[in-house]
Image (cartoon, rainbow, N blue to C red; front, side, top):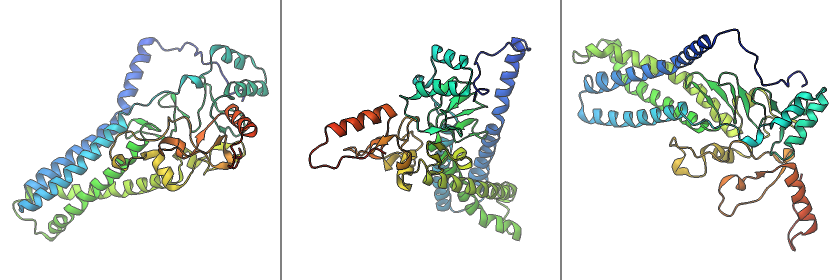
Length: 360
């Protein structure tokens, strides 16, 4: 740990300011290429499906209307979710996790790993964190100069720490994290439905093409329809596997990073440490209101810093909120100092006729 704690003051670069600025803007432009590719494919699919299939090929007016209504519903929900995933407001880590200048000086002046660990432990004792590093010390980011909240990680591409980071996705040019994970899940789900719908409705005309019975009216656009079928099939296979994997992660309350490396608690690593039941795990991402579950509006519970954990890892007590809203219905994470005060209060003034809760 002693070697990992470094000063955040960066030495002057060998490049001039103009070159650095040019490289920065070139890098930013390159990161948008995957997004532009997706937008281009979706734009072409709109032309192929709406014009070539529904307008120029399908002869039944009723069938045209049904296909167009369903298609545009899926298209709007898919585009809306994709937009929210890309341009979600990824908020920064709260200031209470950032080391003040005097604490940073203490950390940098500590000569031993134990001394650095002591500085971080003293500063983090009032913070609601339950996870640790592999060595058991407080998770600290020397680039952002802050104590990492539970499930937060540093993204090297975004150059900042991100709350409940799942992964950095080049297809949305953004980190998939606490602030847009619901949008990302809806984006995958609606994109999968969008591809399945195009594939299933284009299949009869794809078969007719191979049989040589496509008709003169639709012959000019048959290649667009056939290509749309193959592209939808290809994306449906990849999206289906990715969406299924993330449904599994949601049901077990894990991120992609936690699936590869289990979070470390005081008692050791536990891949199910944040799992509080499949339905509660679902509500943690999608919220308490069923009317908003499938709309790309932010309804995730909590603030991204504190999460309920399994009983064996708790620095918390469990209470039931009267209205059942928020994390109080699942358990509220508290700092070690708050738990000590709560334990003392119950020891001195237990209520009559009720069992004194045990703080584990």
